[in-house]
Length: 90
Image (cartoon, rainbow, N blue to C red; front, side, top):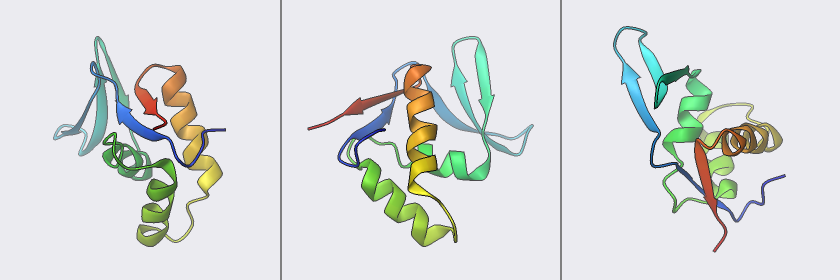
């Protein structure tokens, strides 16, 4: 699992943008678009390279009723594996 002290950020080649056509946030990658649900967009919106995973989980808990920290970490882990998110552990 991803430690709570890691600080995620979007990789340089990835952009989180609002798609007017889809009326939702998407991740833009070279030659690919990943459509996000609102919770996924909220997680990635907090991935600024300064905010820790633990702080992201805490922030989401204030916004939403039920956001399991393990699911947030699993989501970020899958995006790290796809090279969409990078982690700093300082």
